[in-house]
Amino acid sequence: MCTTYLVSEIISEFDGLDLIGYPRLVRLNPNIPWKTRGNGAICVRMGRGGGRRLHAGEISGTSVFAFERELPGSLPDDAVERMSNIMETNAHFHEEKTNPAFAVLQKKPSPSLYWRAVRGLVTRQEVEKQVSGLGEVKKYKNGRGLIGACSAISWVPRDRTYEIITYRERSKWGSPRRISDESVKGMDRKTKHTFNNYDYPNERVAIAPNSPCPVLFGIRGDEPEELLEAMKMIDSEDIDRWHLFLTNQGTDDHLIRKRVSDIGMYESVVVAGRVTREPVDLVGGHVVFEIGDGSGRIECTVYEPSKQFRDIGRRLCLGDEVRVFGSVRDSPRTINLEKIEILRLEERLCKTSNPTCPKCGKSMKSLGKESGYRCRKCHTKAEEGSAKVVKVKRQLELGLCEPPVCARRHLSKPLSRMGLEANDLTLP
Image 1 (cartoon, helix red, strand yellow):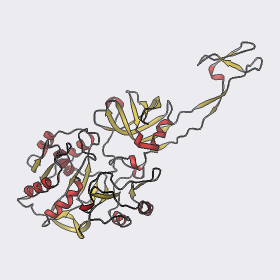
Image 2 (cartoon, rainbow, N blue to C red; image 1 turned 180 degrees about the vertical axis):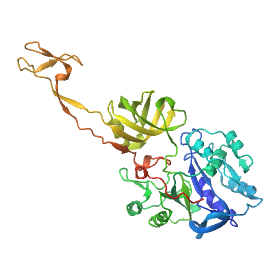
Image 3 (cartoon, helix red, strand yellow; image 1 turned 30 degrees about the vertical axis):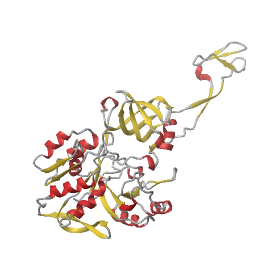
């Protein structure tokens, strides 16, 4: 199924309540081995609304509005029972990794829960203890979904983006999607604050999923009003419903600055160091190199799906100084690269010819690797560094580099947002 699709079901079921702020789509730690594919959770705040109305969606032709703030009120007594019906009707319990849960809370848990869930490992027992007394929860199967549900509620944004997600008519679920490539490229050119729309080098639409889920397409950006216009620019099959989400996607919230010796399991890190082993190509097309920062060394891997991004890894040399961004894999221990910043490039020299004998002017002969040179005629010797060399132009430039759109993770901040933090965090 699709977690975000449940927003429509919740809004429809609780039609006597107002939506407070945009629904929230919160991505959590991408390294957890038993996560769902996108490790996403949703949070819907409902009650009695006041203040400015925000156009937040549409269900079968009927507009959905969210309110800027909440007025005093209470949830219906049967809220848990109604949520149970939504979950049990929609969840695919036969799927191995489907372990859903929900929470109906009157008060938010500490924001620290979100930060631990997006950057580390949180147990279900920890979550149950933290939300005790704040409301009611219900778990299915092993109940790990409760971690995501409560963490999404606890999120207080430091940075934020938005995503407008459109959904297909139910009769078309599982069939090929009809979306015009040209309209996606046109939208990408005309909008200023959207990102990750189209992968130009690989000629791939990036706004549509590959799975047979209800989603038709999703457009991400920094301005809700622009996303509404962007959606209208897409030439596609009919849209059954859509919702505008407040999200933590594209924020790098999962990353922690670390020294190599301090890196823990399941973390995503930012590490600065020097290349200590030349890059090599592995079977399957992956590229591996090693960096060290004085506290230790660790391999960095650029995987085949990263396509052209692998060339950055291949062009690194011993001594280059870099800052790597990525997720830690424990076995084999490596940082899976999401971005890399080239801080300093080592000078690279190429030998053009052996040295000339200073006595007789003849070309000298190499005595072997790092053993120097000797003249064939008069046997004069010369040091290894006396060969004639030229400086090789490096095929790298200083600065940040990222993989193509098709290989970027939900949480990874694109270069277009680097240095940009949300300046409007007033919405509930």
